[in-house]
Every structure is written in structure tokens, then in C-alpha cells.
Amino acid sequence: MRVGEILKLLDGLSPFEWQESWDNSGLLVGSYEQEAAQVVLSIDLDEALIDEAEEGTLFVVHHPLIFGKLKRLVWEEYPANLLRALIRKNQALIALHTNFDQSHLNRYVFTEVLGFEAQACEGFVCRAEGAWQTRDLLESVKQKLGLQKLRVVGWKERITSVALTTGAGASLMESVKADLFLTGDLKFHDAMKAQSEGLMLADIGHFESERFFARALAPHLKNLPIPVIIAESKNPFRYV
Image (cartoon, rainbow, N blue to C red; front, side):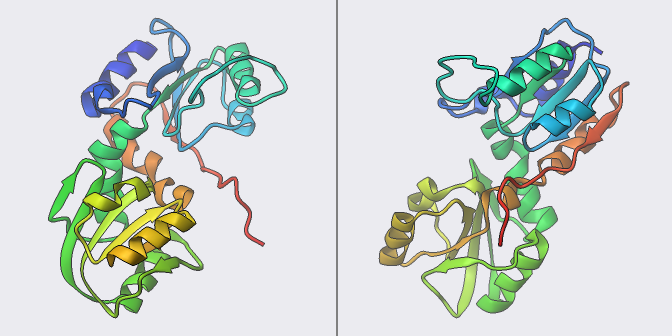
């Protein structure tokens, strides 16, 4: 199956025009005309995945390997080392990032992983209303995301509304109308802002909240005439 055919299918599923202006989703490495032997889904790409995959593999990842300004290609440096390895094995790379966040990933994590009944999923933010004891709710979130601890700001004893943005969603705080906002990559000044404005935050981690990317995408590719493989995503952080 040609890479361009799969790209067109993905565009129909999650339009690339929905990506943010700073994003770099789409075909990043390869040719529209080259044949894909198999599709490998992963949140990110690393050397081990490239080495283990056969020649002609198409990787579909969440985070773009080429991101921001690429000023030089030095083979010993990231991301040039991975780009060189991809080209040597005639492998292709497509990124589905902020467009997929909006169309599928946030809703999938909110409803299918965390079990909330979404009243609204607008843009990057999913929201639900209900009645929860805060400690019980946070324990459930930790268990379902595989987190040992949560960093929390602005404690409330009871929660009547909860919102979520996977990855790094602190920039959306002002648009969130909820007692509790679940997101990742929270910085100190994000915490200070939330505390002063009465918003409770819980840091659910960037990797931990987005590692379901492949699981969310795979069912939509089940009818492809080539194998679709879910790769085991690896967290670059080690907790000691």
C-alpha cells in the first residue's frame, strides 16, 4: 500500500488542517509513492524501533521528529541520527499531533481510559460534570494512568466538574471552566496562576497521558491490507 494512500486515510480521520500553526504534522520522511510493508504506531520514535522494524516500514507517531527549526544535519545529533537511520532503511514517517489531540486522543483518554462521561469535548479540552470525593477521584486517575503520585495545586474536598487536556495544556487554563483540570507538564508559574484563580490542577504527566495514542488510532486502521503494529512506547524519564 502506498504511503500517500495511508496519509489520505489519516487526513480523512483527523484532518491535518486542524493542527496548530506551530505544529509539524503530516508526512515528514519518505515519498507519497513508496510502498509501505507495514505500519508501526508509537507515541515517539527512537533508535530501537527503527532497528527492529523491517525495511519499508511506515511509522505513524504522535510527536513530530522534525519540530521547530532544523538548522543542520549532523549524524551524531538528534534528530539527524534518527532521520539518517530511517532513510537507510527506506522507512517513512508520518506525525499525527495536535490534529489528533483534538479529533480523537483527548476524548479517548477522558472516556475510554479514565471512564468519564464527557458532556463536552471542544478543541483540546474535554469536560464532565458529576459529584466526586477528590481523593477517590485522584486515586482512580492515578491507577488508570499508572501514576504513583500526582502533583496537585489548589486542593478542593469535592469536585463537581473535571476537565482534561493530554500532554501539556497549561496554556488553556483560562478557557477551562471546571473545578479540576487534569493535564501535564505543569510549571511553577502555572501553579501560582491556578492557585490565585481558584482552579485545582493535577499534573498527570505528558507521556503518561498521551501513551494511549497507538491504542486510540489502531482500530481505525484495522482494514488496511498490511500489518498494523502497536509499538510499546517508552518513557524517556526514569524515576528514582
